Image (cartoon, helix red, strand yellow):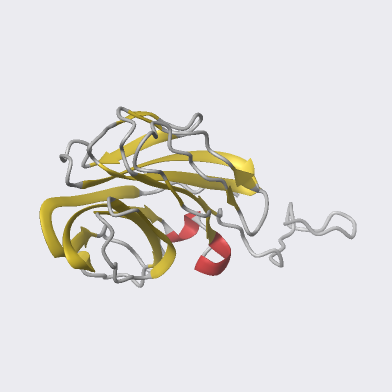
Length: 234
């Protein structure tokens, strides 16, 4: 096994209020895993795409969602997420190569329970824990903060790196999303809190875990061209 490492993280955002939100997709091959983090200003009804990992609104200020898909190859350049009210949006799409992750959404991707901050008096929104349904492995944990960009992120969960901050200075009436990742051999992780520049920044936070690729447990080969005694070796 080896820790899943994303090939790319594709960002897109618009500060123009609309009901149609075109999220840019990376060029992907069949079997690649796509994980989308989506933020929208306000709390409109979001028409889901792909397989929903989570979705939550923080009052009427910001909503955060995540979706996953196994690429068939040759997807369009973007996917449209529709809301019933006009809002701005921000999104990130993580792409994992087919040989880097386990291969099915049901057994290769898990998400925690999202948490929404109160809209006042909060400067350290919590990053919730996530448990890998498959147990301990060389897992990749991704923690995400969906925010209304009236404030800025000033501190991130310890041990998480490779920050991607989409639309960090979009203004008070727009949405942003920040994500980081951690390679950890464990069955679960509970990231520490984020910190923000203001106590009134509305947020939705959550954590996702990606399972590493594993060869078939029933695939065996000889070492040295012949068996050693009666033993087979993987």
